[in-house]
Length: 217
Image 1 (cartoon, one colour):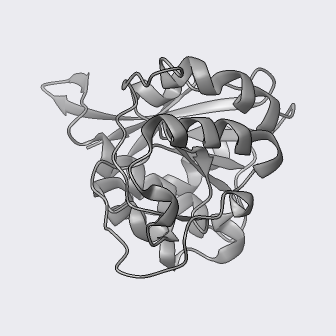
Image 2: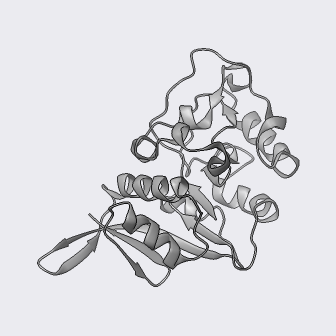
C-alpha cells in the first residue's frame, strides 16, 4: 500500500536544524535536478533555512488528525506527500518552511503539475496489484496518476434526508482519520475492500463507490 497526501497550507517553521540537503530527499536520483531548478526560480533563502521532518513541518488539519510522528517508522515509509516545490517527500525527509501554492507559475518552470509530471512518472512506483490510497486535494491529483496500480480516492460526504453530497470543508479531517487507521493497522490492506474494512473497524462510516472510499460524516 502507498498513501498519497497533499502538503498542508498550515505549516510550522523549524526554529533550528540542519540546512537543506536535496540528496537526502526521497527519489533523489530522479528528482534532484528538478528540485534545484524550482529552488532557483523560487529562491527565498530556503537552501540555508533550518529544516525539520516533513511530518513536523506540515501541520494542517489532515496532518493533525493523522498524527504522522506517532505512526510507526515502517508505515511512514508508505506515505508520499506531494509538493509544488519538492515533487514528493516522505514524512521523515527534512525540509524548511515554505509557501508555494500548487497553481503558482514560476519563471522557466510554468505550471508545477505539468513540470513535475514526467519526473514523477519515472520515479514513483506503479505496480500491478498495488493499492494506492489517494488523499490528495484536486490540484495535486494532476501531478501524477498510476497507470497499473489500483487507485482508491478518499472522499467525504454528508447525508441529509437520504441525500448525500460531497463536501470539501470536512474532507481533510476525514482523510486524516482514514490515513491514520490504514497506517496503524497491523497489516496494510492490499485492495479497496481491505481498506474499507480497516476504516470501518476504526469506527468510521465508510462505503466503497466505484474507485472511491466514501466517508460519511
